[in-house]
Length: 130
Image (cartoon, rainbow, N blue to C red; front, side, top):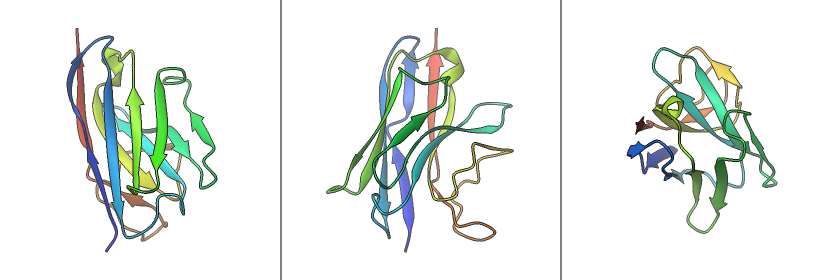
């Protein structure tokens, strides 16, 4: 059974840091393209960063230089290190695999392959306050 389980969310002040984890069961994290998305209140679901199977990463301009995507193959877990957090980083963060669209109307929580081949976690809330 495939499962993506995010953890590490919470409340933090502006300028603070958090590290999110996404532990995967059912496939190897280095066998698929993986991504982190943000569903901010009232906004679309945005791809913040992705890591290809070969380990190459890409970042949205909004997080470049502040967020870092890493992977631990032994733990079958991917991470999102978030530094210098801003108010606009508030929202639900989702881990996803395969078919990583840059933007969706809404993040499909817990989605399994259907119309496309993507997998999604349940999300973890991050709240940044002043």
